[in-house]
Length: 177
Image (cartoon, rainbow, N blue to C red; front, side):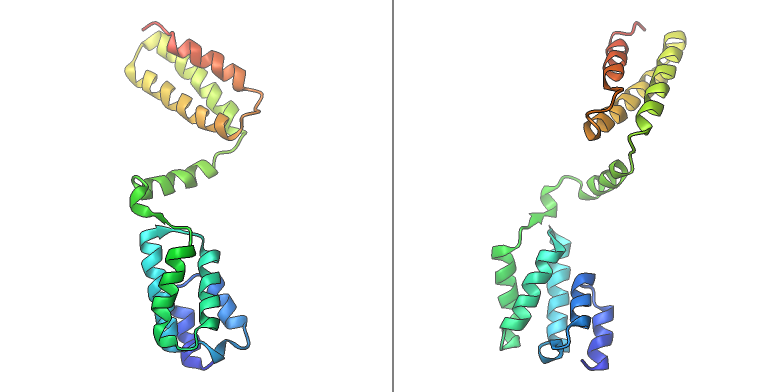
């Protein structure tokens, strides 16, 4: 592979697994050139902007397409047809507020099972404060904690504190203000 294509490959906005394949494959120089790499990059940017999909599956279709196509002048159309008919695509427009969901997913993955006991204690303390002060802010905080606990118990359904939470939640719902 010539240095110009190699430099372009390193700077290309394509999945790292595809870059790794192109760099490690000793026969790729027979197939890959600047124009083809540009088409792969443009296709990836287009699909990545519009859809959620498995990068490894995308790369697999690209690699197969690069090897199969004898006339690379039709590669973009060939690849697009293959991807549209075979790649499992989820339009980003269908996912309501895509960025918020992505951020939420990152936050949920950080939740640890040992946070259940801490959140449960905070809920009990907040409920005690609520009984004394009867402030709406305390009530809102208590319900935020119950929401977090419900997510944690969804992630860890066999946790020993689940019954304690259910009893505490029942007490919160029936609290006199």
